[in-house]
Amino acid sequence: MKRCSFIARCVVAGWVLAPFFALANPAMLPKHPGYPMDKAVDPVHGQPLANDPGQKNVTTQEALVEAARAVESSSRQHLMMTHEDNQRIIEKPGAGVLPRVDGPAIKIEPPIKEGTKATPSPR
Image (cartoon, rainbow, N blue to C red; front, side, top):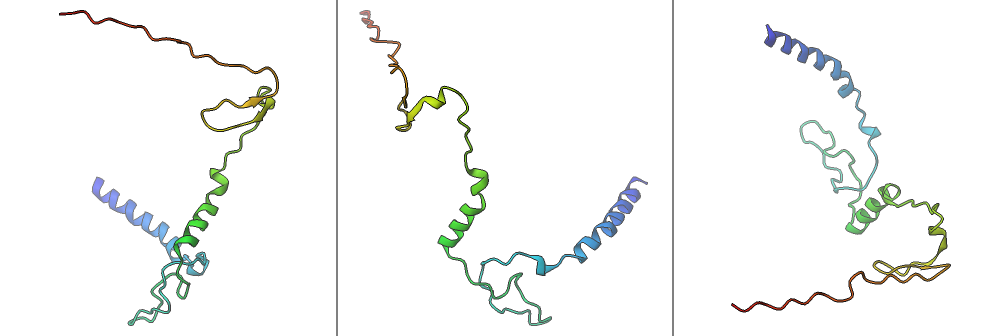
């Protein structure tokens, strides 16, 4: 009984999804450079063998530029300088170096000036 209802559900799902596959329009696919299929046609049915026949071949440089452009807006940092301490920054010299700020120069000393010395015990 369970197997029969499972098969019935699959058949109904197939009937529901079939129109979506039938209405898929290849003309709505984006026109983009890709693999050069040129005018390759199926010898039996005469249909094109590619989704985008006749498109030019893409070079490595073009592919990298387009990939960077596609994710540029989502990968860019949008940091807001709203904290009052950040308004004092004059220059950011780089990673690992404290920035120059407007106001008192604060020097951070290391917490340990000298390491402890231990003499080894003779055995």
